[in-house]
Length: 117
Length: 113
Image 1 (cartoon, rainbow over the protein chains, first blue to last red):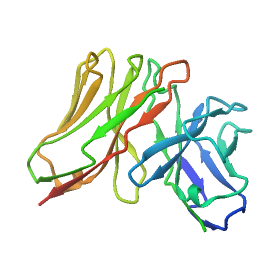
Image 2: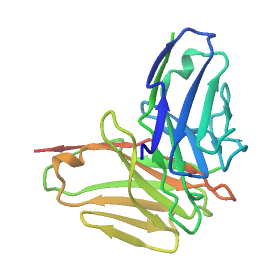
Image 3: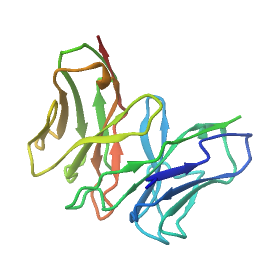
């Protein structure tokens, strides 16, 4: 049981290049999230999904796109990378809505460090 | 939307002392308040959480208190140990059917032996 796995763990891009981060979870969770973590800024929600085939915008969605074609996978895409997107990206999943009547613990991946030059 | 403020940003204590981290939130409809611990280079992990119908919750050396009227909640760690050194994040759920988490900016706790 691997939990939440992110690929790749490290990547260096040049401004304007595109790339996709893959998040895979084997816990059959409905909810999946992409956060970015910057020094002194905490964790900010980029996009999220409440189930297969659904996506929605979070706090900082500009410059990113997502897809959830399969329940276990949540992809984060950067179409034209900018230096401001240099960050550590965390994927997370949850079996339930975080504010629902049952615990909504987020299970995080190990993170993907992206540098845009 | 929801806004979460967390203080202090850094906290240094001696081993055995207590540590308190405070957070305030803006949306009175928020109903779920977790705390996550992130060790250096690791992923965040849930350590304790509280729901709006409860005023206090304790789990061994850690406790969380919630004041709904004042819209603030706090993490209390007693008898701190070096392994408690980490960054701690508070969070609050947003209102509405999605109920996403909005995180504070984090507190770096250092426990000196």
